[in-house]
Image (cartoon, rainbow, N blue to C red; front, side, top):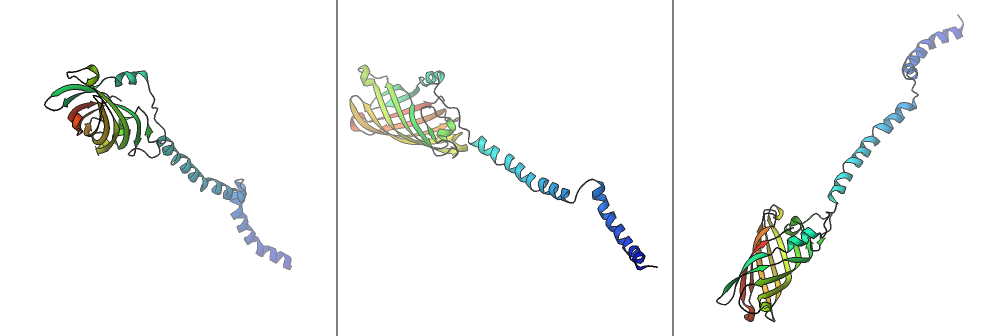
Length: 224
């Protein structure tokens, strides 16, 4: 038998095995490069892009959304409702009322991704989770004398600290102020405690200045 026929017979089993291995992909219409490209495009990149698009970006945008805080007419009208108080001076006690205004507040207890500054309108959580505010507080005392002598004007600094549930259930405050009453100047110190998201509280203010020496107990009612 010629050598060419013998070598052809020897190569026939090997060619049949190769054809069987390559026949499956080629019969399915896929070239050798197809599965590699599909695996590279689908497996590694897909989960990374999905995780990057879904997990980190959503919470960041939701947490960084600033609240819609602005002055409104209903809010201004509600602020006209005063807090009742008891003024105790030298040998006398009289009822009075007090108003509160906050021109500027800095909160050190809120989400760091939000602006800590507020002017006039302040949410309860922003104030009672921990903050420092500038305040003004006019008071009217129902005591004998001229109408102008019944007014007390205070302006100062007050700090709030949370005690329970970031201040929603219980918080306290410490502050100091300058006081003007009966054409005299003095200094005052105060401490307060608050509950019900800061809507209800009690403040005790002491004025040690000799000409204006007094103690005031205020039932603080704040409308936000």
